[in-house]
Length: 107
Image (tube, rainbow, N blue to C red; front, side, top):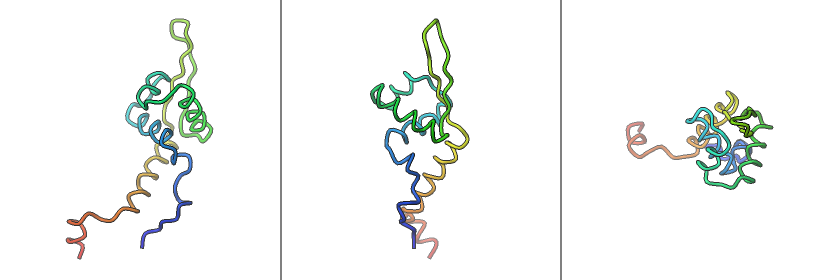
């Protein structure tokens, strides 16, 4: 029987916005704030709050710099963030039933 214990789900990644950020960064490698916010289709304030939460959890890093005298924040997924995303997806997969074709071959 599958373990449906909700406490096994990563609370940091449970938010749709944080999950979208981590998923985007896992494929993009790194992105500045504007690119990231546009990709996940949210507001500046909402993106900022969720990015801070991910940074505090050690899932993303931020590099603050200036480009043409304008401040820029560059975000990247940490190894811990990547592992957490992979673990999150793997856990969700354990909750899903096996596809019909796979179940038949296993029987």
